[in-house]
Length: 448
Image 1: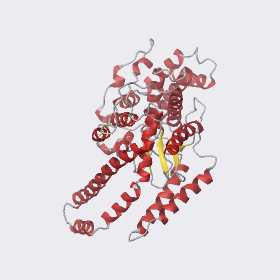
Image 2 (image 1 turned 90 degrees about the vertical axis):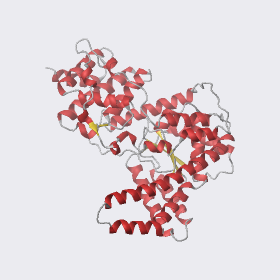
Image 3 (image 1 turned 135 degrees about the vertical axis):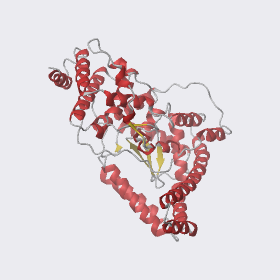
Image 4 (image 1 turned 60 degrees about the horizontal axis):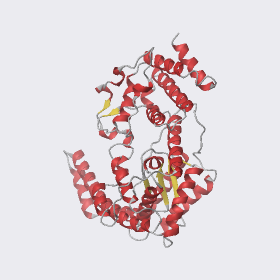
């Protein structure tokens, strides 16, 4: 996936009191050397371009260098020694098995995005999203995806794509079309739209070709490792599955918010058309979901790979190591959502992990009580829409949408009752937890 990942940038002033100990940092301890590395690889990249469009290309690379360093400073990446150690172990096997690969300048950053994705920037920089660790079920699957991204780098797809796009923009044909559009007295907006679609279509055609090439070389790279060859098919199938839905497990809200003194109301899940954003582009958790399969036509790519790889229908059990990493990645995701006050995502992930017995009960209690408290505070101060957007009518994320619908529907008078009932239910378990006690006091006072 060679195009730049668009991670979510949030400028938030409200922070949660965190219910679990943070195991990562947003800024690396060696930040100066990291920033120097990013600048160095981009300078090396600029020195390799010559010819007619070298000025434009160098300007683009300089801009990308500035933007990437800014994304690090803006906390779009996390630095977790356990996740990085695990990732480097997988990479070590790939590099050892492919000594001819040029890997000296490679560096893999961990993006905090929940979207299962990875990307090559074409200059030695790669990104792996936290969401990818939640998706893969084995070292083999992760190694297959990393091999695919390394193939993009080896084949110089980013460079070729950038050069091809600049050539297209500067071509006589495109300049003629731009000139024709500017002369139009009527229908100019539609003409501009058609021109952009044409440019994007040509880019997409190149992308599809590049993906097929990366599949082929990636398989060659992957096949030299100790990992199971059929995992390349398994990884693609998983990516195809999440193209439609990232948050693919229901959380059953009623199980968590049905109390004898205050029963769950089905009206809390009723769909209100006024809450639906009719603009397809407003799908916030699409967050570059297309990049999960720049990745077009995964079924077609699967069929091509099957010519060289035999399917293995046996169910592989995740190793204890990958399970531990998946747990860390999921915990980190909750931490990030909580810190950024993404209360819909935080609630979904908290309930899901608790349902799956992957979350300690005390962390669950603190997270949920804090989410309810923040929901009340945001709504009371008319700030709720800043943190929980409208439901996108084009979204396939029915499970996350249900959580979002619930948070939208519960009114202040309901939130204070739900909050108190939840705190009372777990008061024995949490009797020595100062944060939970404070939240209980908050809801008790509201209900007096």
